[in-house]
Length: 323
Ligand code: SF4
Image (cartoon, rainbow, N blue to C red):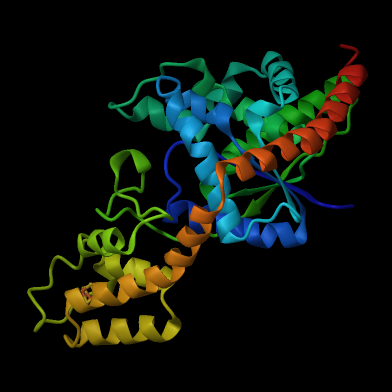
């Protein structure tokens, strides 16, 4: 049986390095090994951006350009926009009606929101988004979902919803399994959680000048008195980036030279800048050559091909459920 993997990204701003290492790099592997469904999760984006829909609209093209520039291929994977295919919402509505509120209460994102004094629930879409997520997976009969360990509960909710649906309506939707992915620790340039909304990210389209400027602002080992004293790379955001992006040789040299007080932070940041330029400039260059209309064509193709598959699946489920 062909394994079907499903993964979406919420188009809510600029594509950045966190997306690259946490999602896109994995997609490049998946598209070789599985029948892959990669989508713009724009309905999910609405739950946090309903008051600034323009951001979602603007981000759609950027995301598709970034995916293609990094190597995601329409010859190997399906690319589509969630809101172009209304049958996903039809199934989500069906799932909503049979999901007890207690299941949605278990969602880690919802629990985080409840304990965070700076946030409050201002829409039910956010509360019920694990249910829409379940429909995203089930509607293409996905059996693999790439997630980090911290998202296992989300997938467990989907498995329970799908199991209940199968039991009630004698359907045979696959219960999706986690495809656990290693997500390297990559914080923002200020050492806090990476987020487009706080501007602490390095985007995939950073100019060389702004890239180096951002790297120069990164936090280093604050206990290091100066170039003459040894540094601790394990306590340094710059080295965290070296660990992910630099060659093994540069990593080893940086670590030992820092500990031996033979490398200044300025030079270390310049080296990181060079590494990042080698990675990002070709991506930015490719992105700049992909037009909006090419992206529209790709999404139109996804709407047609994936839409047809989804419509067939939905009609079959609806018929089986007697609805
Ligand atoms: S030399 Fe590099 S690794 Fe060491 S503290 Fe400075 S920036 Fe960090």
